[in-house]
Length: 493
Image (cartoon, rainbow, N blue to C red):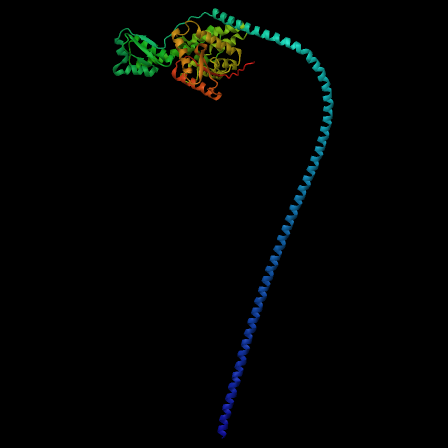
């Protein structure tokens, strides 16, 4: 029993001990869990406090930024409002000034109107007085107008007589010889065998001669003669002299040809200069530019319908000087313009345009005054004449060219040219009648007004001019004038 009791006691003691251990373990575990929970709670609270502080800080920062932005917007709106107020104030001030000025202007205008009213009253009184005077002068003016018309008619009649007398006197006092010159050069040969020597072996000599002079050398069946043909008269003269010297010397080969042509060219340049200087001396014209003198000398070898241009220019110079003397105009200026009026012909093979316009440009380039340049450019009516000198040069040029024997053109050829000119114009639709004037230098074309309008008249003039250019050969230029006239006719019954 005691053993049982002891066993029971041990069992009971063991159970109590196990319970105690369990309780103790449970308490320890509880304490650990409680500590851990407290630590986690503390950590959570710490994190919450930190997050709350961060959120609070961000909120404060946002509030500050909003306050700053709001303050800036408020200040900007305030500034804009101030600017608008200032601008409004300025506009108001400007309007006030404008109103003040308008008031002053109105007051001044009112004063002016009052003054004008008084002035108009005075003028009306003066006009009444003038009306009486005008009525008294009407009869006198009518009589004066009739007298002036009679004087004007007499002046027109007398001026025409005076012009004819001046031209007649100039023609009679200017005596000049006229020699018709050929437009090609002919070189006479001692015999026909010389033609072979000029041609040379395989044509070497003649090719060198043509290349050196720029002139065509025509060797045909013409006995004992060689024809030189070229566009430039100076080159043609150089070729003629060179060929004559080669024939006289007898040595005809390429090297000798080039040598002779070069020497003759140098001599020709000197001759041209001397011819120009001699022309200036004979006409008593001094102070011309050296280049103009050279161009004048080149005209020695230029012809127009067989008339030597330099001799023609000298004759025009004398005629213009005589007419200027009769009319009391500057003689030297008229002669100077007349002497060089055709210098454009010296280079018109090299420059495009009419010789009159080219001469005008050359005169301006080399220092001639505007009156002389205009007289040169307008002597064929291609420019508007700006002085009486230009009219004299044009008249003297026409006189020199139209004198009997001056130009090589038969009466039959002349009439045929005028008929051809009128025939071209009559061939256009709407043309009533055409008339060739001024020795064929102008044609006037009358058209039917119901068939040709004003615009068509201008086009018709251009068409006629183009057709004349393409179908005719003529000296100088031809002016085409289309006349369109509308007449209104009625009968009084």
